[in-house]
Image 1 (cartoon, rainbow, N blue to C red):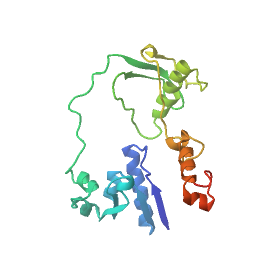
Image 2: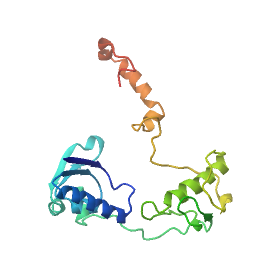
Image 3: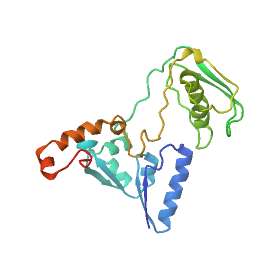
Image 4: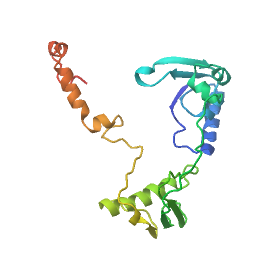
Length: 223
């Protein structure tokens, strides 16, 4: 059997990622073929064969840049992936960290779902990461409680925040923007162009060209 997985490590903590890789290798060991579209280094290390596409994105992509084992990919100087795997290139750590503005949001007594009456300080004016294994309560704390509370305060949103005692420091903010992984339109293929209806003008333009008129193509059929 051929298993095809498209970026299965997205959203996973490294602990869960290791468990995922064990599952994939177990499927292979049973005689199956496992094909994974992935950026994760640990997954590439565990693989038997790597195919790198590129060299860039969009019109600059569409070619096979390199293929081979993990060790072979690292030796290919024209491979961007190989450069990072071999540490010829790397993403440097910041030399300085922002001090922030000295203010913070404090979530008190969060107890929605599996949260056990926790209190958390979130410094403002900084790049803050909330991490932990899958299912540990990250989204519940930040999305279900914090975001919904701010949205209801600033915009009178109707979604009720998760159970908590209070959130202090709201006076330091006047806007909240939530960006999640859900489609922005009615279908999973939605993107900013479909959401803003930019494609309508493009379809109308294509429908006006001579070839479209000869074929009787209208704006609806041109996509």
